[in-house]
Image (cartoon, rainbow, N blue to C red):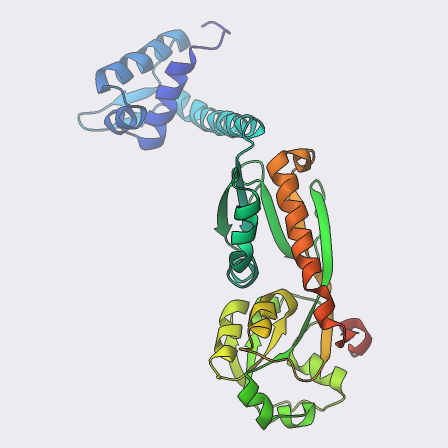
Amino acid sequence: MSDLLPPLTALRAFEAAARHMSFAQAAAELNVTPAALSFQIKSLEDHFGAPLFIRLNRAVQLTEAGKALAPGTSDAFRMLESSWRSTKRLLDHTTLTVTAGPALTAKWLAPRLFDFARTHPDIELRFSATLHNLDLARDAVDVAIRFGQSNDEGLYSVPVRKEWMTPVMTPEMAQKFPTPESLIDAPLIHDDSIAFLRPLCDWPAWFRAAGVAYPADKRGVHFSNADHAIDAAVSGGGVTLGRRPMIIKDILDGRLVAPYKLALESNARFRFLCLPGAETRPQIAAFRDWFLAEIEKTANIWDAMKIVPVTEITPK
C-alpha cells in the first residue's frame, strides 16, 4: 500500500458514500452516476489494498478499515470547505452577512437598514437573527452583534455604550401609574432574555433603585424575547423594563413613554464582532462605522435620565 494520498475525487466519493451509507444517494449528491461513484471507490480500495465497504444486495456497510477512515475524511472535507468559503469571502467586497439577536434585529436594525442601503447601494446585506453563537470562521458570517459580559477573546471587538433599562408603557397607562410607588399595582411584564445577567437587572432591582419595596408575591407575564415584551407593552398589556436600543423607535414614535426618568444600568453591553483582520474589509468597516454612528444619533435624547448602575443597589 502506497503512503501517497489517493486522488481527491476518490476520497470525496468515499466520504459521501460513508455518510449516506448508500452508493446511490452519494452519487446523487455528487451529481455522478452510481457506476462512476462505484468506480471511484473501487480505485480507492485498490490504492488502499483492502475493501472499505461490504457490498450487500440493497445496502452497504463499512469494513473496519472504512470505519477508521470515515471520521477523518469527513472532518478533512469540512475543514477544506470552510477554508474555501473563508478564502472566497476575502475577495468578496459586496456581500455582508450579519448575525444579531431577534429583538435587536426587529427593534433596532430593521427600522434603520434603509439608511445603510441608501448610502451603500453596492453592499448586499444578509441577516441571521439568532441568539446562537455562530462561528464567524465556520458559518460564513462576517459580523456578529452580541450582548452580554463576554470578553470576546480571539475576535476583533468594539464595545458600545453600556446597556440600561427603564419602565416603558403606553401614554394612557402612564396616566394611571404616575409614580414609581403606584407602579407596584400595574401589570408588570418580564423580559427573561436578560435573566442570565449578574447582578440581575429585573423588576426587584429597578424598584430598589427607586426606593420602593417590591412585594415578594408580585406576579406578571414573562417573555423569552425582549421584542415580544415590548410589543406587549405597546399593545397596552402592561409595563416592561425596556432596554435602550429596543425601545427607542417606539419612544420616538409616541407609542411608548418612559415617565420615571430612572434607568437601571447593567454591566453588560452590545459588541461589534468580526474575525481579527476582517475589520479592514470595506463592507465590514462601512457597517461598523454606520452602526456606531447610528447609536450616537439618539444618545442625547436620554440626557434627563438618571442612570443607576445595578452594582450600586445589589444586596451584599
